[in-house]
Image (cartoon, rainbow, N blue to C red):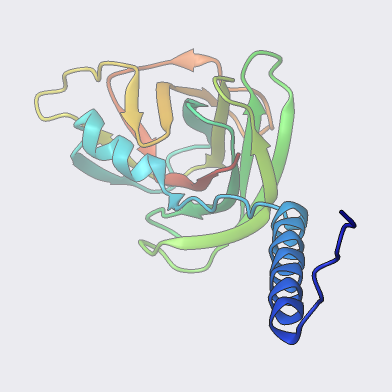
Length: 205
């Protein structure tokens, strides 16, 4: 018996073309999905030292004005990889050239120096800065050099217990030294905090 080929009628033709076009569309969509990069996560910004003041218990504040130059600030470590986007300062006097330094705690090297114009006393001043990347679990110190600051302590004068958690930042101590030179402040004291110096932190992947 001879083999007979089924004639290709209009119905069969359109059915074949429909599935062919559908297959091409599905394949094209898959290829586009594969080519499109996954957008990075965008994490909220944090102001860790604000939480530090609450969690440390340093709620009693005294204004100190023109009391001598000091380099002082907080030792901290990020729990995640992140970056500093801005610096915030508030002191009880004006200062057109307040020096802020971010240090590598272990090497004592200066990672960043910023000069902030504190144009009004008792007013929060924010300065945006070029992003400074922070390594997870690495220790840093942020300090300012000033003769004006808020002296904060616990009621009764008790010392704070470190480390102090504040979001994705862990504060491990407060340190200071006298003088106006840009020298790493190595004296440790848990009985008070002098400020207010803060920074804006944001986690990155």
